[in-house]
Image 1 (cartoon, rainbow, N blue to C red):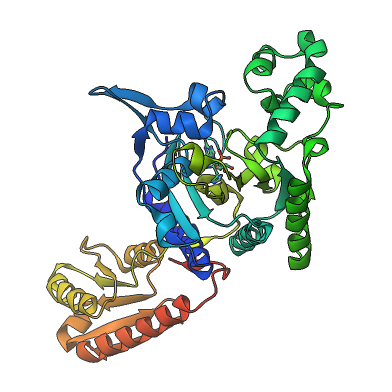
Image 2 (tube, rainbow, N blue to C red):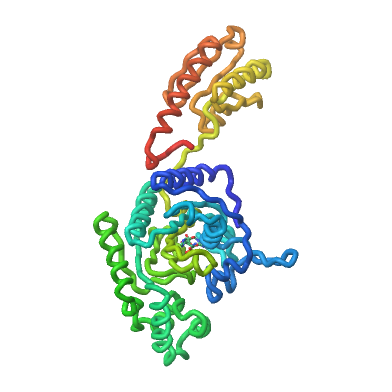
Length: 427
Ligand code: HAM
């Protein structure tokens, strides 16, 4: 679990605001669900024989209740959707969320025990058009964040019936090879054989190399759905790769499954930036109506590792620099006036040299420094040093305030109107 220090916050906020913008452009509304839910919700939604439920949940008992720190956001969103009878209010629901999730995994680069996800869920639309639009939207979002090497993998898991047939076929294929499998995969053959496809062990990979694929077991409707997805992605010009062995660690998926990766050299084993898919059965399994659903979540820390966006520090717009104790009083008044005009500013009251105050202005990302030396104090003037325009002028205090406010308000307007992919932004 990590601290995020103020110098890193600019990039976090930049990604979060790009995400909120993407969501609003696509008609999603934000939902906030609790960080803690009854343990049974996750067991039922995610599946008993998954790594998350078996060994990664932070669960505790409190006054006869079994509770868990949410390891992901889909189960809570589905619970809220059911609990608030949302299906009766609207035919399709598009929700997005962001925030911390908790999994007791072995930490490594891009894998943490408290991490943040940016996710979304659509309830009530079964068609492949909605799946394609979601994937295309995510590719666009990663483009906004300037993530190199983006690769989309798609697969179809079919319906629950397909899963059962495939599971049986896989068990039949792997049983004669049981002795060569890793201990973990031997156990999974009983509990969750599909997960063996995902194993990184060499012997396990060898054993599944010539195994039947899920696609051999898809029924006509599953095929039609998957073909529809590919057709829509082709029409949108969104590149993707069909990966018939793609499976994911959560049991609720049906039909469309996808994963988006970034360049491996930046992210290593944690190169999966976004994971998602359809879960047409979960809402009903949790006691709600029969409603199809699809969603995804992106790991925010991983996006930050992968993104090439840089954010220049911009703590304040202006620094007021009194050179000596006598000027501090006037400097405080100037700063107060600027703040009343919504200019963010700091007064450097340390009484240090001009050089050191200019260094401070740079570190804070200030555009303007208002300098008050003995001369200015006597003349009731102030020097306005514009660090961006490399200009300097001495003006009466009232006039200086007007000039600074006009200049900084105009500058902030031009930053606000910049597209999200503009580099070296100020936050
Ligand atoms: P997930 O594949 O378990 O899916 O996680 C989604 C993403 O969260 C991963 O691709 C990764 O970027 C990030 N992530 C997961 N675990 C960690 C970790 N320990 N440290 C850092 N980042 C991590 C889900 O959570 C599903 N709820 C997605 C979904 C929504 N499916 C349908 N709707």
